[in-house]
Length: 510
Ligand code: PLP
Image (tube, rainbow, N blue to C red):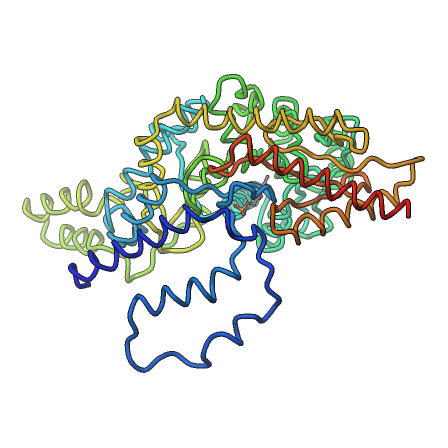
């Protein structure tokens, strides 16, 4: 690493990125390229000789950016947001600069300790129960994604129940969630060896705004118990991916507790809103949960990836995921044998020091985050969350969320005032689910109209929205949460949606 080259190139790169943000509104929000476009633009093999940064950045401008969908555009309303910010970016930069691999405490003590501290700070912002803090058996960890968070807790829960009922019972284990739960749960079940026919994705409907009914859960659990199966894992969601449904945590948690099931709460998107006291009610009942996750990289100004997971019992995780291969072992056992052999005061003293200071991992005195996750290696991700929390402070973060929710409220009102449209489910956070309203209950035509509208909007390049299906209805989703989105962008988006809808409706009449 040449420091002076880093300085020079680093300045150029920051200028390039700052210019990108300055001109971001000039790009079509959704990339308009065709599959394979880049193959025609780049050579078949890497260069033999070094090229200049200018040459590379020219290619980024001409060849890469056309194939980029601009998630940071203020007119990006698709999926859920993936926030970037100056603080988040600087934290990423610092993490890349230090480039440590903090798998165990000793591999970079600050990485582990900062992560524990920042996760405790964040738990306090969310007013999570004390059991999730690191001072007892609980604690938080940064995973790459919510999918990884769900996988590790599912594995921890699986091994915990198998220790109780015996390993052979794997095929009897049953997982519960609603049919609105993110697909990452099913993927986790596949990976963890849970039989897919034992995954109960319980049906929801508009009568509960797609939240899981405790009665449905109770009924399913009772049926499974009668059939000799073993209920062991429940996933509740606060802010489902399709429509931000909020499952009733307290009632679900009660059922989980009665049946000795692990209760996980996935608040990947909506968890960010719960730092505001007025939205905290949506995670009421989290005290009944064994684990809770939210993605700071979605809606809290922290660059991807930064998925926060808290557990009440860290040992459930480490018992399932810890390994201690020879190449990571330290000298504590050797010293112990020395001690037995010589029984000298010196050996004893050395053993003491190693156990309590240097070799603390094996003595369980420190957290080794490698045992809380799937990979061994891990990035210094807490730096960016720490920087976000410090450079913005809690009040700015809360107001940031409130602003998006207000914009979504305004958008919802505009939709509900237009007779061509209908709001499909009541808005809770900053996602509005709506569609062109059906005429004469003709759902099939209505679905086609909305499909055409989505296509027309996204190919215009003026905005990007996505869709879902709710009770067979093709529904448009506008998720407001990009850091650069202001009122004018939301108003402009609504204008474009109205215009395109009018064109489509007019062409239908003709
Ligand atoms: N859970 C919910 C509720 C989500 O909305 C999402 C993604 O949008 C996920 C889980 C998966 O998130 P990730 O991409 O971090 O795995």
